[in-house]
Image 1 (cartoon, rainbow, N blue to C red):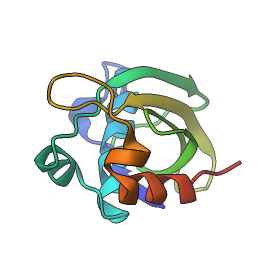
Image 2 (cartoon, rainbow, N blue to C red):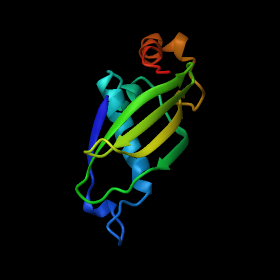
Image 3 (tube, one colour):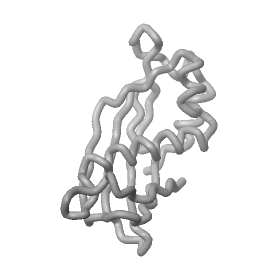
Length: 135
């Protein structure tokens, strides 16, 4: 699944280049869109008592982007065993050139901050994410 982000002027620095911190924000936008597209948007998860904090993020910057560039972000499930979800992101410009590669790791916790046994407590979500794992 692909998410489109159009670079905004405020995301650029004095040199007209996108500030590096914005790529992580775009990963979050793409992740939220990804979950919504697979039927598990954040509002639904929160209504179910599930919170999903970020555990780790990586970004490998390949090429600069600038104001009004279109950045296409692909999200993939790299690993999921029930408590931790590991996602990968590939960001490409309009020409199809990779501009950034990233990863993020997330936990699934209940409202008391304790890990959820996803397979037992939310088998439908567990199955959905497990089916999306890519090699």
